[in-house]
Image (cartoon, rainbow, N blue to C red; front, side, top):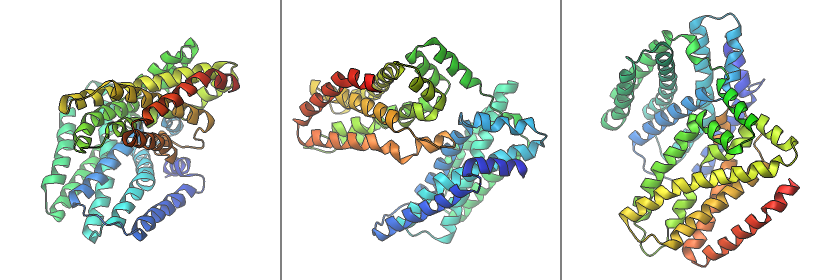
Length: 411
């Protein structure tokens, strides 16, 4: 209990003040959507899938958070029981996941659709199951890599596939609830057999990053940062998948130039745009050393631009395969939107970094992440309605690029 209380205070504050803030945010979201009169027909399977997948993904990111490397090191220096340590970590991170991410999303579901008491209870059970499944899989993967045992990996894959198939194909809510409870119980049994050191994460990843800092190469640092933070690569890969799906969705709008909207949507690569916020040590070094601000920000912007262009290239290629007609203006539009997004992201990160966060999930789900994509969506909409907008954007980007040396000297 002492370890659990210590972890909860680190995640929610000394007096658990973040719990109150999260519950107030849930109430505000519910009242805002409910009073607006928004009503939607939502299948129960979508409700259960959202609760399961969102809880599973968020819990996985929370456990893998690099900020937890230091948070997990302290308790292992004290006397502990194996099961007490395991369930302290799992319950603390599950509580954080449910209160900060899952409950606000479920509040929106409750506001736009009427759910029965049984469906509500099953959705909450799905969320808890997602958290415990993520913890159990994380433990199995770590133990498999440490002890060279891969026998349980096929079982984990079948477990995952079976759970998601049950969401779509089991129509009886009561029977589905029994399946979810069985999965939750299986996760509980697996965690009972887990070695607590499966959750121990020494700050080895930070050592690679510090070595990259010492080389003085910003691009090398960025590449190594991505190599040691797999979630960033997964986010970029996910955007590539979205880039392959968007042409099928946007291609049905005839008579409207909706292609620029896809470029704007694909700029929502939150992890890459919070580099200074998630590494206070790097920010301090860049701000203190003379001349490093402009040098770092320029290369940081180029890096974001190249990643944006890589994702946009997938979008352009799939659009050409499905619909054809991709021309030079479309390619120029993708370049300008990717470059403008990179410039705005770097400037926002430099002048308004996110402070007082607990783990990386706080950064990835911070409302600030929508500022640049919203601006880019507005720009893309203007370009789609008025083709002359592309030339206006070109002038703006050229003016920003030419003024970068002056901005770099000032910062």
